[in-house]
Length: 116
Image (tube, rainbow, N blue to C red):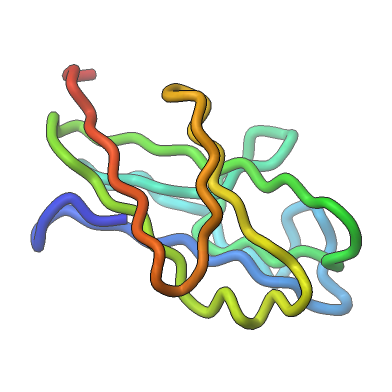
């Protein structure tokens, strides 16, 4: 996710045999920075910079969280979507109530209009 050249953050989600759906040795916690943050989050409220999960069978919902201290326009893009063979990836914006199909070329842009 990017706001500008000085404000960006990344998160990674992947599927690995031997990984679990809880925090394990394949995961990395997200450490909040002072400007722009994106992370996946699990049902226990753990924020991940790297989230390795056990399998990709059926429908999976992986929540993402955003925190930006600066008002402005942010862009999310996904990379390596092709590794999710036979699966579609959708980004659901719960604030705007929109759903966008994502692939390696799709960029999702949104605005933060208030200061935390």
